[in-house]
Image (tube, one colour):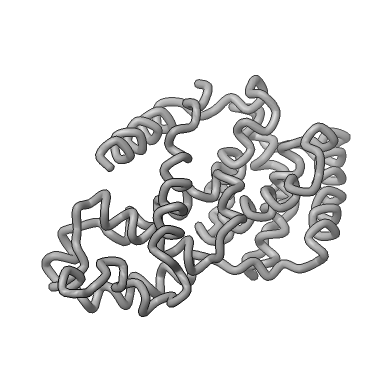
Length: 251
């Protein structure tokens, strides 16, 4: 588990030093990084940005990546996610943020041919994303489940112990990072939330109070979801850790 923390710290350090060069990166290799960067610049909530990543993964689960401009689809997914989460994303803001993320140091697009080309492409791509999703923007959010589980789990801990360990921050970081992987589509939202929480506890070396007195040390999370088997929980945790084994981002 210490290896996971070391890799997380290394990747964070790299991101802090230099932002990715999307123009020179292989197509789609930094797509979810682009979604997260633009989402943060647009001031969107973490759950909204994560929903955009889910839409991206769902779209290209059906569509051929060679047929579409990666960053146009990413921008369209952010707009669609804003509608899904009732967090409005102005098309002009989305276009400018996307353009400036790709073209580092460039100013806002003037209302000219390039701007209208970008705007039209994103608007058409959003409609295409919505069609592929069957106009169903109801994406079950693991964030909602995780927040609920964290509030409940906090009541089980002594106040001092809970405050001394960054359980919530670590679990949420695992959840956000898992959205970089299309494998998140393979699991139910409550199960992903429990896996992120379990992984955070393991990494931090924190035991759930009185869990050792139970017949099964995994039984503590059965109060949250009764249909998650221990083997499945470990499987999801392994998939989360695989995210940190990806090749380093080109810098």
